[in-house]
Image (cartoon, rainbow, N blue to C red):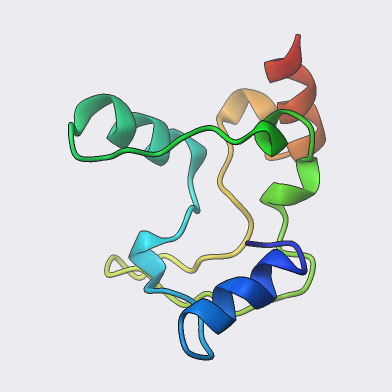
Length: 95
């Protein structure tokens, strides 16, 4: 959703705006923990996670809003071992 044309498709799907911030993918660890602990979370890892570091970067400076906890949604929050660098992250999960 952070890469065109997918971002434009997401906006079109939601009648001209992005979905509610709490439902957006914004934290890799948060999504991982939720998928492990919640039987109703049915996310899947798309192949692009392993091949497209730009997937984690908000290069177009879209305003995705704030979560209920007032966390601004921007770049995806990566694990600390990735040093907040999506290129390092993708390289390490592929090895």
